[in-house]
Image 1 (spheres, helix red, strand yellow):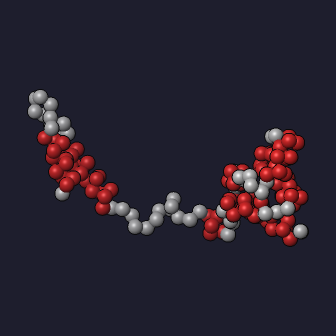
Image 2 (cartoon, helix red, strand yellow; image 1 turned 90 degrees about the horizontal axis):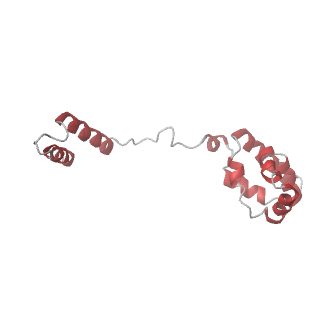
Image 3 (cartoon, one colour; image 1 turned 120 degrees about the vertical axis):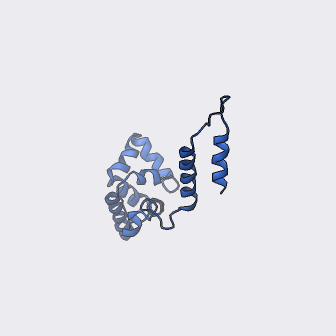
Length: 137
């Protein structure tokens, strides 16, 4: 009801000649769209808001992978990182000093951004590498 009152108030406002600012069909359309938006909220989540495919296939999220990677001893960590070209490239950009920095800070450094750049297959390969490295301790 309030939408109709708002719409009629808008049409009553006019220029000096008294012509309406919006025609009645336009007001009806605006009121109808407002009501549809207010009352027609979808109860079921859309396909865009459902759980990502990685959650359904068992691939951990990037934050979990990051934690698993950071818990590895240095030698296993470096071996895993060198086996993943995109992450290795992120370190190689800085040369030998980059690897020294990583060695000093890999347990607290935020690897999530680099892991997020990987596609699902690469993430699964990274998870497999981490699990193998854990078993090789």
